[in-house]
Amino acid sequence: MTIKSRALPITALAALLASTTLTAKASQPIPTVHPGRLTVAYRTDDKPISFIANGKPSGFLVAFEQAVGAQLGLKVEFVSTDFASMLPSVKNHVYDSAAFPVLVTPPRRKIVDFTTPIGYAQARLVSRTDAPITKVDGAEKKTIAVTQGSALIPLLQRIAPGVKVKQFPNIAASTNALIAHQVDGLFTGLATADHLVAQHHGLAASQIVNSGEAAFPVAKSNPKLRAALNTAIATLMKNGTYTKLFQKWNPANVTIPNALYARYPGMPHEQPAKH
Image (cartoon, rainbow, N blue to C red; front, top):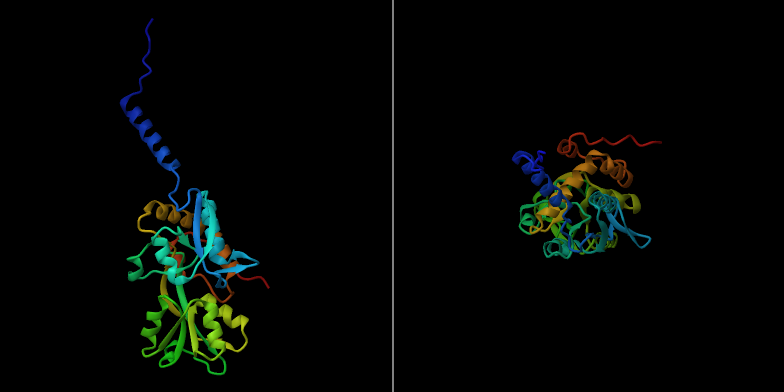
């Protein structure tokens, strides 16, 4: 009786080994600060992006980071922080990333890596209606509040040379200073500016200026996490999650920039608001 060999042909064996290796790599846990958890920094006062409501983290990018974590099979833990310490803390593995649209700049790229874009940042200046500043370049020689460490500072100085910048730890402190006539205006992201104007009578907004690409920060020493986040972001852009969350949390006059649709082909567009 002839005994048939169970040995696989060399080509089939090589294919099996390659498949096994890929499966093993795919099953490897995503490297995070705490195994099985995605630790995300957030700000408690930057409505509608990242804030605290009823004692819990809330906002557009808080919800989006929760969706990212679910996509990766990771439990998301949010830790409140100030903007100035956010990037150094990501670099030093205190946090994995942040629920904030960090403006990508060359100096910041020296500190951390960034995911693919989660927005294209726009900003505007908020002033009092009793002393309005209708254009950003009208801030020249005036005192303007900006969040400490913000990349909007050099942008403002470029648009309005001679502006007097006064840095504050957060949006709440900047707003209080503006209302108390301690500064002439404040310069911040578009959604935040519009929210302030809607919430505070006596405040007015200037024209919109483009400030650049925004993304989530990731430690340079963790390229595997960056790759995983990019994959999750691409999926959530294309399946409509980002679009739905954007429309839910942002004012009706704040729309997704065309550049983001171009960056993620097939991304669903916003739907007209129902009246």
